[in-house]
Image (cartoon, rainbow over all chains, first blue to last red; front, side, top):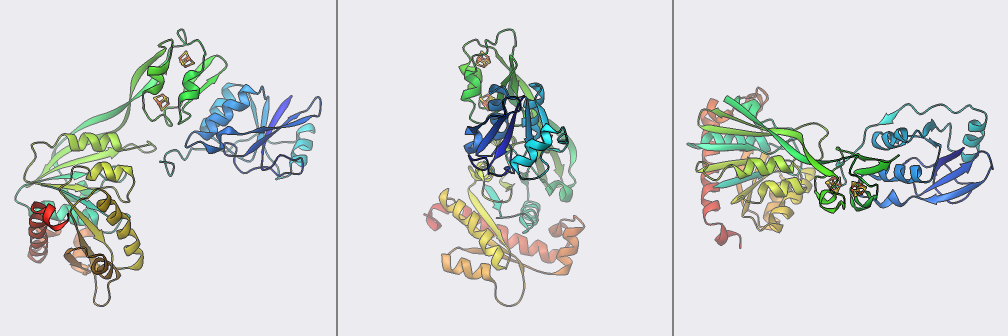
Length: 122
Length: 285
Ligand code: SF4
Ligand code: SF4
């Protein structure tokens, strides 16, 4: 299974990013091969709809699950349509979250926040 | 004559000014363009109410025609489109109705559908015809509603008061585009000066003749007045901070209809506005 985590930096010691749609990078971790790669988030510079674009990228990268502190409703709709599982981070440590995932201890993400569309962007 | 009333933020007395100036005229049209929070109608309580729904065009794609080329997804700069498991999804709450994807699709897979975003309401209150724009909560932009409000007024009465949304965003620009004169309402505080400057910059940009009404005036120094003197902006009226006016206002009563003192105050302001608005090019080149 491949999971994506929004992260602040391209390094294993980085921490989890606060935002799913506007994070600079995703850490893609393969639970079978234990390999990690980093993915640039091209949606970060978007005027609007960053969550949708980011979610599209995740879907296109054949990701099976994401681990994130929060997620907007539009992005969540894209991810759920593609049958991608949404987990909630337990803290800001990438390692802790991956361990918790492996142990089956990550909670499912429940609080999907409504978008802030049009309030600031234009 | 079309007179737009602006302020940098809500609650400065923009509606108080618009409503009372409209009421003090012999005959007028009051247009509430503050579509996110229209409250002029609370004062006018208009009769003969009618309303019209306003919609924008949203694309919907036909699954059978779509080839999955994703050209539309890449094109939409608002990211309102996603292509997930062989199916195109349109996010209506993000779409800006630009129509680009519809034109661009090589398979002509898109149709348009109407999405209601709000209404325009019509009514009459004594000498004032009242038009109110209402934007549904959560909608992106009230500009289509403002356009509708302002396009209908070609044969309006002598005085048309346009109660603008607060601030200086594009929706305000749309509201003042055709105005002959702009009134800036300012509060007598430093923060009030900041807000006044926002709308002052805007009317300067649009080269609109303008004047300031100082609201909530008390004895002593008024930073907003000082700002007007420094920038050489004409102060066309001062509204005192008094409890009788406050009470009328908070009871949603129109003060010029209730009290002769305010009737005289707003009549004299309207007179100045009429004069200034008619020789605009001379006073504000
Ligand atoms: S451009 Fe047309 S054919 Fe291509 S993905 Fe979009 S809707 Fe489908
Ligand atoms: S109409 Fe414009 S904003 Fe809406 S989905 Fe199509 S391209 Fe995007």
